[in-house]
Length: 229
Image (cartoon, rainbow, N blue to C red; front, side, top):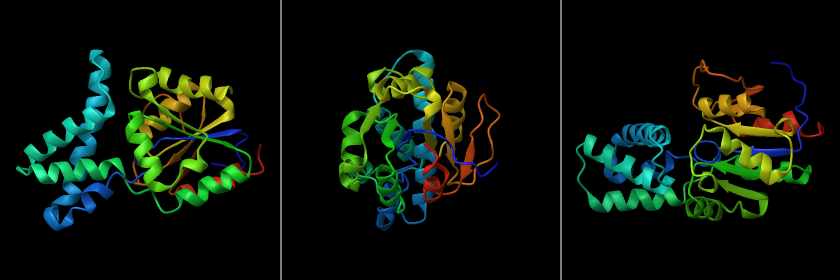
């Protein structure tokens, strides 16, 4: 990939795994989970995403809070954990996940450089509001967009169209950032400029679209965008 800066006017971010660390909920329960925290995180996340895709294919939408709760119930049962207090604790922690440490400064730099900033997420509006407030990011985001406005989860094209319609910009003037490779490919196939934040050292997907850039941390993003507009 070359080092030319992407010429865009807005920065739109996926939320979970990109701005917010979905592993932080189980990590905060290591006093109960011990070494099972990582296993629980991985299975919970995998099942959560599977349910969004399967519900989309079935045409049976439920908001991300319901999906997240159902995925946790599957995970706890799979791991042989019958602890209602732990379930409640994990769900409460998921409402205010920690953001990754570089996020506040990155958003500050982008805002100061004149970019429109937004979240585009599967998250339900109340979930996103709690996460943004808990991380103190409210003043750094111009829009917080939920798939509930279109009634279907990513990677349906109508989700990415929501950002285009809300921002009033063509797709090619929007930089979309996600740590989910499938999400990054879908946004690229839709027509957005895409920076894949490959936090988890994933392999490249064999899907339509291709991210314009690949980074390991959002801390690398401002150098790709600032002074390019």
